[in-house]
Amino acid sequence: MPTYVYTCSKCGHLFELRQSFQDSAIAKCPVCDENATRKFYAVPVIYKGSGFYSTDYRKGQREE
Image 1 (cartoon, rainbow, N blue to C red):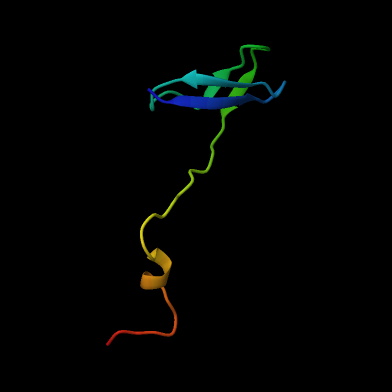
Image 2: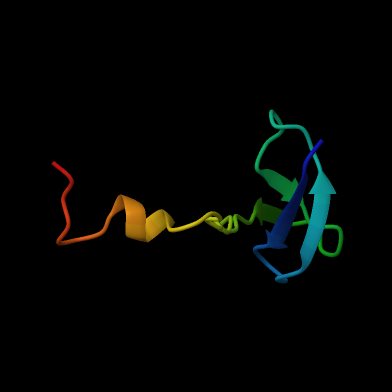
């Protein structure tokens, strides 16, 4: 099961919960018992390999 990060809408407390994919994106804050919403973070993408940009999207040279 994945771990999600939540932030409380009232007190700003950050906490983590392990939940299934089907669970609601709203949880109760353990500090003040108010609603907390799930935070989303961008996933870093790393392109590895030789010349991804220069061989696929190079301007000025066309092979015919």
